[in-house]
Image 1: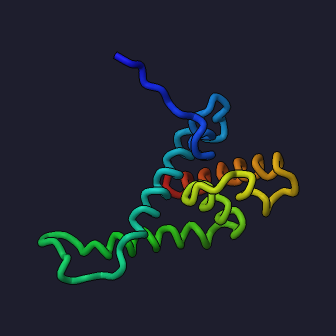
Image 2: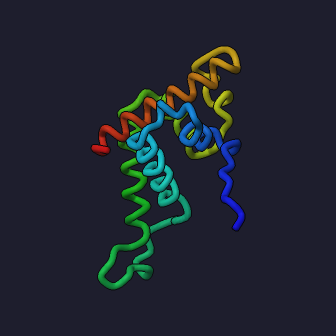
Length: 132
């Protein structure tokens, strides 16, 4: 059998979480990031609540979307705006860290480091609020 290989050169968030120096991203931070990514996945794709899509004994699909949007909004208002934007740009939109962190630092290396620390901070706060 061919051994499995992990591509560690893809998205910034994947490199940070899986890299050898991933000390900023322990299990609570990883869980928080994955939780937010799951919420963003629920928040898109549904356009409205349609009563005809209600599953017997279940809730309408729009309810999951509403809950995801409400939870994301609660995180967003509890964090500094710039920090949330960097977190969302890196973890949701796959923006390069240097670009995402440019609002926090003036040069490329510093902006990448600032984005990494910012994502770690936001994910730590969300992990703490979720009791991870």
